[in-house]
Length: 206
Image 1 (cartoon, helix red, strand yellow):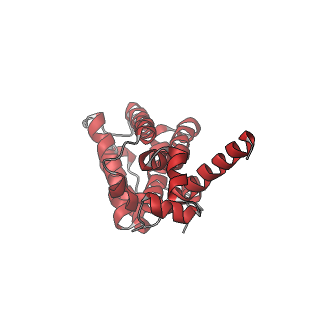
Image 2 (image 1 turned 90 degrees about the vertical axis):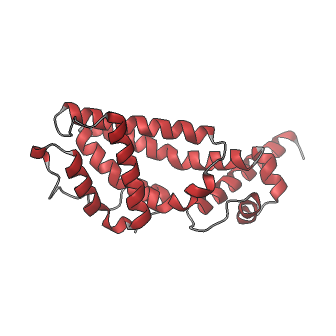
């Protein structure tokens, strides 16, 4: 096999392994092992390992591919609307995304995932900018420290995703009321029609 052909084959195998890993990340109870990923991709385990150098690097690349559009969506919302509206809209979409992938979180614990870690830091930074902007505009309470508010926001989104994402709007309304200043209640806020970009990206559309 010529060198260009070998390179093309390697790229194809890498893409197949990534697609398989991303599919397994969205399946509750699926085993995130090299063997399971290789079987789903129709490749040998050795081929998968050679493509990435190991399981950690493969899963890191797969999770990063999932997170990239999430981070971009947060940036887009910040650019398109007010920080407060961006926060509310993004939390709703984040809940849908986490509901589709939270089952994999426990299996990813303890792995070396530098790409994922960097993207999560970007995501936290975007949420912090939403909160800071909403605080400056007087729409969110300032008596809570920013790190506390950010951590509470992330934890709430994950908790709702793990319990009943169908009730996301109800939970989100209560949560946002707790963060909001008295004259900025979210009760009765308009709900976005149709599926969100993150739902379509993650395959979580209901």
